[in-house]
Length: 80
Image (tube, rainbow, N blue to C red; front, side, top):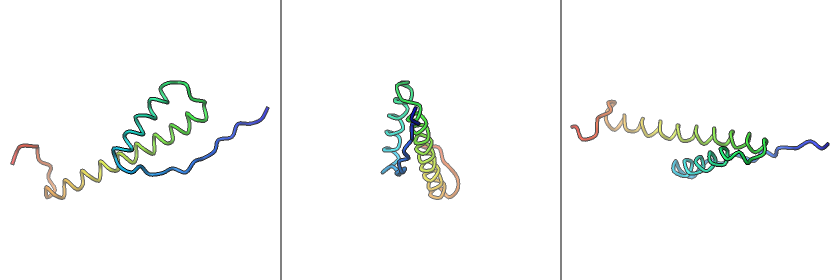
């Protein structure tokens, strides 16, 4: 019986946070469908982890920028 091989595809960075979120949403739907072969499930999980890390990094960067703009202290919206 021939062994199934998994071909690695190079990961690409999403164009934006929104693009990463959209791809992640679609990927989660596919993974939850239960219709993917095991090799594709693993590749999908790995891609999902990359997308999640990308989104978290972007959110962290935005939070740091806000802290700098607010001189180190986050303010509640509407309060001055």
